[in-house]
Length: 606
Image (cartoon, rainbow, N blue to C red):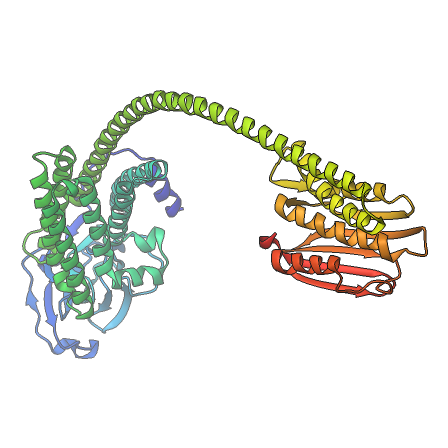
């Protein structure tokens, strides 16, 4: 139930509190006690042989992690005729171990402190005191500081008054933690939306400071951490203090714009570097009692840097206010731990107030920085819009000029292309006409030769005809190309009835396509001439395809093979030459139930 109340207070309660008068229910008893500094870790059985000295103060401070234990002897007397119950409060939440004994019989009554595994419900260690009517009892308190500051205060409380006081104390801490937590969450949301690293460093720094304060005030094990994790964090408190300060320094660098003052930026880098070295040395040398001084000097350096930049940087002015509050709280914490001056006697929640001022001031510096960045972004957008407008006009003028030039060039190209086509077509027609006339004056054998040359010329001409009607003049539709060629060859030889199967769903570059057609012309012509001498019908299969990175070209007939012709004839020699020299590929010629010519070459060579 206590956790629910605290969490509710943490997030919802406002920044007002109530003062309670405890004069009749609260008594400080340290000044009526006797004390012993124990450098030898004396056992409980030998403690009566030691000499105690009288205490004249209600609160003592011995600095951070002293190398001795403290024994406190005090007497409580019930002067009434009724049994009474009181609460003994040890006024230090971070004491390592504390043990309450009955001094008369040296029996342990109760243990407390963060090294003792128990369910804590109060910030400070407490002990239940029960006295019978008119009973007078001597008590002995053993305090073992280990890794925390040794501050000593003993209070006797009425039970109801103490829990009211505890509720008020946790109430105020909840207000502080809630306010700081909300500011941190707010700045984290801004970081997610802006991706500005200054907000990230702010969140990391103050989350660490908030974690330290939760531990410092003894709230860690009550509400936030397991017992083991709480002990681990306290044992490594050197880093719990140092890491947020390092992020705070990096945050400071980004906000005060050290780029405008490179010397200051280099100096801060050196300060951060030596602070990290000092913290590591203190931790590994077991000199944690000096970490407070080092951290205060580090914060003082950051304060001076922000004050220096405050004259010409508005964000630095907010940071200076925050650092003054932060530095003062750190200084008073150190003075209290060292036993020099305890401001918390007069202002119990001075640390919370100063840290809230610091958190707010630093957040305001970010808000001002964001405002400036937004103005800069707006100005840049306006400049970009103006630049785009100018560029647009220049681009439009350039496009208009280039369009005119392209139209002229395209017109010239079309004229040249038409002229070239006309010349090629005329040249082909002249060659064909000459060969036709020449055939009339030759014998049968020369006539066949002329037909073959004529077919070659026609094959080349057909490629230009196809290009003329193709959308892509760089590639030829081979299926259409081969059909045209086959029809041309078949039309010139009327005494043969040949069936063709064509599998060529592929486009090839013009040069490669022409070579393929010349090969096909030679192969099909040979088949017509020699493969079907004793037959009037036959079959020729043509396959042109692409497999992975190679082209494969197959021409196969079901004729008589090489019975009537040699495999090294002129036509086959020409095919081999094209396959090897032009395609840089492989060729395989088989004569088994006909002739099969297979050529393959790399796509890049096509």
